[in-house]
Length: 273
Image (cartoon, rainbow, N blue to C red; front, top):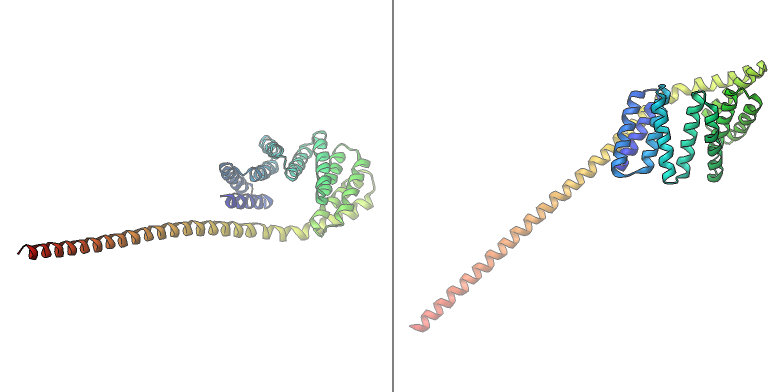
């Protein structure tokens, strides 16, 4: 069941990334149900965070906030530092998406704090990029540019082209507001080039990859059940075999006793004659 809950969460997340939110919500809720039954707190936190993101993307903001907050509460309850980092990052994105940058700032500061403790450069990247976006929403463009540049310095250490998209888009937006249209156009072209080249390949592979993984998990589960049933059948067979041999042994012993009794009685009769 632990493996099944993880597979369902992963499948739901891939559906979410592929903009199929109906299936995403379905599988993420299934993951939460199974994780709750087996007490897998870590998986509950993951699935709730992903479910909150799914609701956020279809503008069901009350449900989004509910599950994103629950994900943070769960990770706080077990003091899982990495989980708290992700949960704070998700809540920060939610508040920025809903034009509440002031509520995003505390969560982004936590993202930077925890990422620094964990030594996670990717977390520092997301924290700085998130701060850049929040300052942009507040029209504090110098502060926005400062954090976008911090994110840009960090992203140079990664091979993942998708991370550069956020930086280039941030530069484009800020430079446009500052009236630096040449710079804005330069980064817009870089942003669009990467975004277009990645989108088709990403979407094509998302569902197939995790659908196969889920099917494999299910097959493994079926095999485990079959193995258990075979072991049970083998035990029953062994039990029957033992009963048969014991029965045979009892018959043999009784036969011997009858023969001995017969001989004893015959000898006694001969003596009496």
